[in-house]
Structures are given as structure tokens and as C-alpha cells.
Image (cartoon, rainbow, N blue to C red; front, side, top):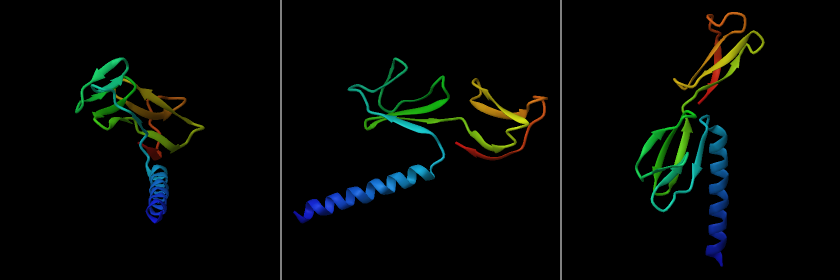
Length: 114
């Protein structure tokens, strides 16, 4: 009985640690369980050990434990949102922050995520 209580306490502490780490992490990632022979992404089956970049700008890795995909795009958070706008470039998986009135002028970005 004591072993079960210790296991529950351990699992509770472990889950709390995971929740805290999630709030500290800035990169956006997601996880999917594996299939029998690999990982399924956008109707493509990838073998275990494969890595690839998706059209949506995610870097994915297929492992026996599952598929993990993390965003390659750094999202600007703190900038002048009144006078500036963030423009997404799908080909380069990047975002530029420029003046609304003149896209040739870059705006200062103070903080980003990713």
C-alpha cells in the first residue's frame, strides 16, 4: 500500500514539473503517437529515425516513442503593434516586422517566441 502512495506522489510531482516546464518553454511543439511502421504526417509515412520539414514550417522527428514537431518560426511578441505589422514568409519560415506605411522599413522587436 505504501508503494502505491509513493508512486502517486511521484506521478503528481512529475506532472507538476512537466506543467512548469511547459510554461517556461517558448517553442511551440506538438507530439503524436507513432504508427506500427513509423509516423504519419500529411498523409506521408516516415520511418523511425527520419526528420523532415513540413510545409507549415515545422521540423519533425519520428522516433519509436512518437512524432515530435516543433515550429521553425520565431514569433515576434513585443513591438510597436500600432505602427508596425508582422509579415510571414512561408518559403523562408520567417516573420519580418515592418512599418505599416512603408514595408521597406524594419521595426524594432524587443521580444520573440520560438
